[in-house]
Amino acid sequence: MDFYDADGLNLGLFVLRVVVGLTIAAHGLAKVRSGLENVGRWFDSEGLRPGRMHATAAASVETGGGALLALGLLTPLAGMALVGNMTVAGFIGHRKNGFFIIRNGWEFTMVLATIAAVLAATGPGEWSLDNAFGLEWSGIAWFIVAAVGGVAAAVAFLAAFYRPVPAPSEAEA
Image: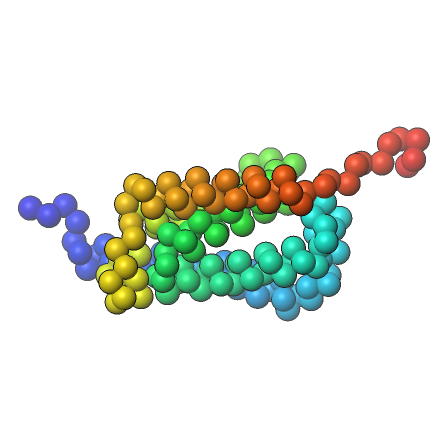
């Protein structure tokens, strides 16, 4: 007796990939629509310099990685890119606000990164471009690539580029 219904599993993976992938892609496109100069100034204020370059990179990773995830194409690599991006976003933009998204915390970035890594483990399902092209990239090793590779890339990125702005002292305020 099969534990999973193949069509149900494929439907679930398809809906999950499309909803999460398009959500992240839309978030990247919103950065472009808001003006990369404006987003870049905010990135500068958060300690990512040059802000415009990092705004462009973040928008590109979110748009491209989200689209790849939605299509189920190169799924573990898309997952790794999104884990890295969401780790940086959670650390820089949300960590100081605590866990819960209701206070602009890192809860949502963690959920998105987890979904991206888990899809590397499960694979995108039969209703995907990976399957159409015969790419059988899934399993524990691909989960590790996506999760550990994404976090390692985020740590390396932060070490290279994150220079937080010191808070003004009371004497300066």
